Length: 434
Image (cartoon, rainbow, N blue to C red):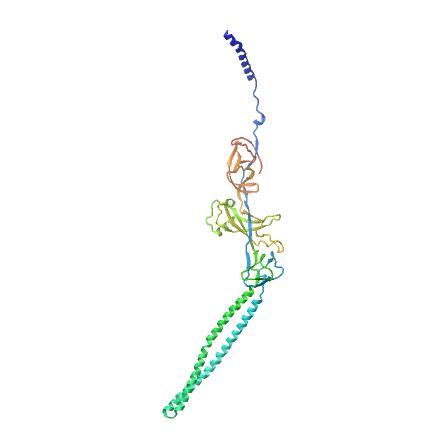
């Protein structure tokens, strides 16, 4: 009875399970959609090295190659040489810009010249007196010779009794008088030379004073030492100035210097220098750079002009924090094509761009900047599988970036942005031209 109860409830269950199995076996699984059967297409670019010139553009500050400032070397009242002297004016070498009242110095020259004339007169008078005295001395010496001869004769006569004592005393007295006269004249002649030396010393001192007065007079003219542009006038007309007071500032127009802070890694990539130079001698370094790269200075603005430059200085000290190197580029004769009526094209502190460009082209690989994903690129290998590869980036120019290492000729660079791509994932590649 008990098992019949099991059959009563078990048979329907078995029948249900069997029916369900039959239904499952009779239903076909759903087919895969066509989109899963087909691989997704991606665009790729075949990497090829190209012969190209490399450039590095940076901003810099410009200064005149020569700076000039004038200070007063004499005191007096100052004024402009003419009314056209204003800030911004171009002047040539030798042009008088400012004048200090020269009257005091002209008067000093006249006074010293008069004193020198007096000294010259005294010297000529002394010379004439010396000549006259010498002639008198000659006469007196002849007189003394005769007196001594008479004395000798009278002494002999006195000894023989032919002359009196009085005659002997008179001739002795006359001889002594003649000797005294000769001695006095000689003493007078001895004083001529010291007097002459004193006058010559006074003349030399006055000559020095005269030369100084002439120099002071010349210093009343403030003259441009070379072609320049007046940048600042520091005094006003008829202002009294003292020695050492600043008067004017100017900048030379023969050359302009551009100073720029260059990233050392980017610059080494530009010139292909993988190791530091064997010496940091400025002449050697600048000479080497000028053989490898050309420098161009460009103005920034609506109207852009450019000038060729030359590296003249490289500071050996590195800014370790910023990894920069200071380079100075000189532009010679940067204003020859601009008339004086035009504004100065290369003004100090004017925004400019300094462009370094390799002189010789090199074989480089450049790819679109959009293909870089955090220092990695996506490649499509021979099996059409995604491959991630790290690359070393070089200079960036516009939308292109130079690849220093990591890519080879023939690599298929994926250009599409595949955010969810994983290594080994397969795609269909579509080649595009660069």
